[in-house]
Amino acid sequence: KNNFVIAIDGFSSCGKSTVAKALAKKLNFVFVDSGAMYRAVTLYFIQNNVDMNDEAQVAKAIADIHIDFIPNSQQTQILLNGEDISEAIRTMEVSSLVSEVSALKQVRTAMVAQQQKLGAKRNIVMDGRDIGTTVFPSADLKIFMTADPYIRAERRFAELAAKGEQLTMEAVVENLAHRDHIDSNREESPLRQAEDAVVLDNSQLTQEQQLDFVLDLYRKTK
Ligand code: C5P
Image (tube, rainbow, N blue to C red):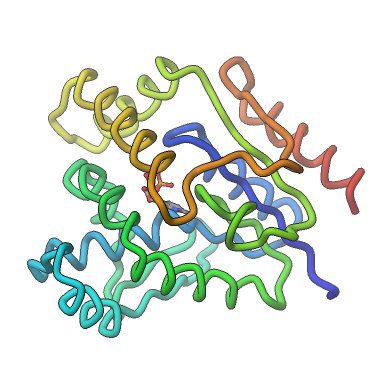
């Protein structure tokens, strides 16, 4: 094995993608946002009225779903069957269903296989919920991110409000708690801190301090 795999897991809206992206840029690694893949599947289910309780419908949908990442100078675009859905997957509608869709065994099996393929030969930073436990149990470096729930909700609220979504702080708090609960309690690869993961609580840290923290770990692990 001559590639380096960095797994970043944690609760919703802890800033995993922000750190992962900055780290990948700094190290010139590929960045994969695994949550975006589950969001893409969820968007497909919404657009095509897929009944997630119907295994045959779910299987048919999965067979029809193709997800691609296009690295850009600015940020990675995500394509669902050729269409750029980078923005469309960030709505509250998708957020409110994504944890139910991601708990489906068929969905997880398909996404995990694709994620493992993406990281098989490349230097990669992948963020999600089960990257250090299920997708890459032998990742070279594992980070588990956490932050004060109120701070997480505030950050997410500001992000969505800036995009013009009409919503209340309560709705955001509720959605984060809902997703964390389902993600932590599902049968298939629940959100867990891997035994060998290093905890990063970023409640009081700037983005620069977070990047320094993980870069330091990377240099020590390399
Ligand atoms: O990372 P993000 O918050 O965008 O992920 C959206 C949802 O996708 C999570 O709440 C979780 O339900 C699901 N997810 C997952 N496994 C991953 C990444 C995300 O189940 N590795």
